[in-house]
Length: 157
Image (cartoon, rainbow, N blue to C red; front, side):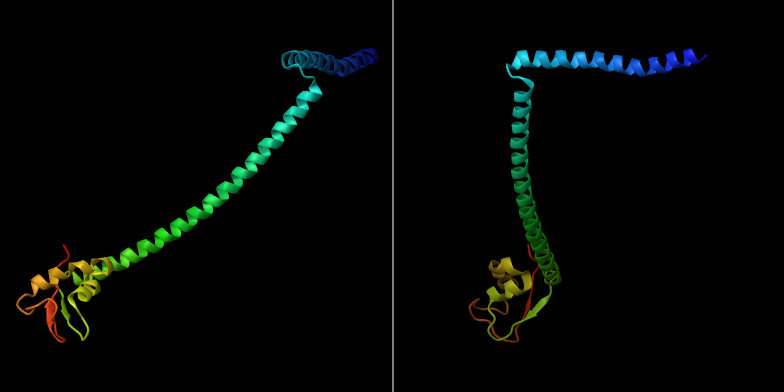
């Protein structure tokens, strides 16, 4: 019985070593084949691969730096877009408030151009003829309007 256990123990120790030796032979054959194909020994191939890896790491660092710079620019652009969206939303609320046929009372220093900017919002100063045409009964000359006149503000078209 002791002999059988000893034989089994020895076999269990030797079998992995034999399998490893077979794998080792396959690895050696693969290395020899690579050396024949490339004309470089294993050390030269390893050195070339390490150089390639170092170059790729440097390129990756550069790309990573560029990506971070682009992400920063994108964040700035998004902040500007959000700011403009807020401005447009404010203008839209302002325009909607005055574009429902409201009235405006002229104060000292007003002109039709300024009134259009006030009631229709910043980019619509050029819409002063709408106010003029809606109030022709009160306005004889568009260059002459007077404080306390009450103009009807037509909807923005």
